[in-house]
Image 1 (cartoon, helix red, strand yellow):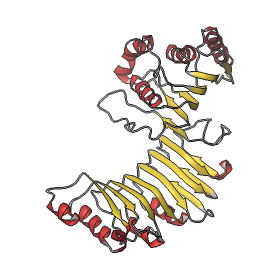
Image 2 (cartoon, helix red, strand yellow; image 1 turned 180 degrees about the horizontal axis):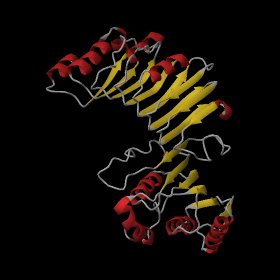
Image 3 (tube, one colour; image 1 turned 180 degrees about the vertical axis):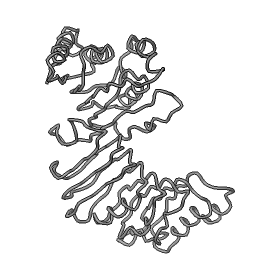
Image 4 (tube, helix red, strand yellow; image 1 turned 120 degrees about the vertical axis):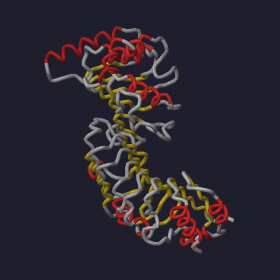
Length: 369
């Protein structure tokens, strides 16, 4: 029946989702479907999910046994796998075609994961919810094109991530000591992360990067996912760019629970072009003149950390004062000062003005650090 559906479909496929039973994995049926979907239908986005049909599940019922290079096809761009065991990486050989890879509830040795990841050198999005059979080893992710990385894994000796273009790093759960994790991610130079807050809860770091012209792609189409639980966030943005401000608003608005920490690093971008120039005195100022809360009336966070706060930026002071007065910050607002004496005095003067504002929470502490 499935072959008939695939063969009877006219033209190529944009997306195909296959939820199969384990016996279809064991008898080669799944492999045949994959071949048809890639070679015949030129499917761009392929999602495979394994649902075990055995009363007493066996290891064989989860093992993904496929021929070498089966996931290589010029048209296949996105691949998502759910609930499999990988014994080798042969199916991923030469997968330079893949731009987006999701491994969800996938079991394998660390070396197999390293082979899978390195076999896909063109990846821009990598989502990992993986389980290692043996924690002894080193997970390595070294991709120059990677823009979004999400990691959740069990215990492991060490992790190394090198990604010069990475704009989003989300860590849901990693059982690894912080000194055993190497992160070379120049676009995410934050002070806060998954480990430093003293409590292990999910943390996402984001460099909000939006071109000033609306017809240019920002790469921020899907900035966050599954962030409505207890978590923390680090973001960098240019408040003079109204598109970046709108992305921040949407990010914060999706939280339904109180955020633990919010770290904001302000960028000073003077190359926004005509739209950016007009926003200084036009649309961007009107944004902060609006009476409604930012991002909304419900968003709450225990502590806010602010970096590169100039003390003279109207937009930065407007955002900080909004957070102070609208009950957004529950406990602390910490503002990074400067080693330059003039800048330090300017920042301290702005902090003094923030302290004089009517606080939405009387217990709120506003300090420099």
